[in-house]
Image (cartoon, rainbow, N blue to C red):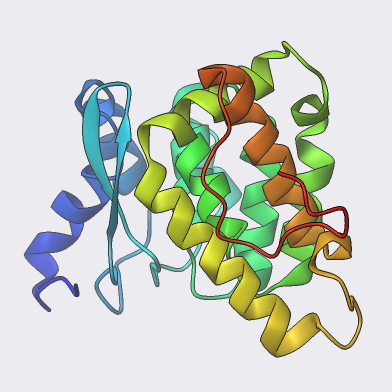
Length: 214
């Protein structure tokens, strides 16, 4: 779905990417963002803390200067980085992702998981570096990612399929086995998080490991 090409929809579209309790903070962030050239594109819906949010797949705003960002609160800074992790320029996405990937806020999680299904290998590697807790049973990172995936099964299934597709198209020559591909490694860590959370196996939409388990 593409939002109507009407600038009046931009603020609503970006505010809808976060829980309603953050609406005032989002408006403060939007006030420092340069005027948009194109409206946000193709929002995807997920459940976060009992609410449905609609996160744009791409935004096209230029980044605000440091002087405009400086007055923002810590929460508002995270919101800004979340929004720019959806930027059309992959280098901008990666730069802002690196500022939020270690956050424990549940509303940050879908921005990170969505980036795991993109084609830029450096972004996928940055997620892996930023989430060391996914490999630690009982960690806060495992819990927050496991809870999100458990509540968004269809979204995670689409994420898996996209990761497989990009591996097959662009990286199979380098990583002959999906399990060796950084995106595949990351998906296994996400799956371990949700399995720990729900206490049961989780549906798989990726090639199985050489051992045929999981």
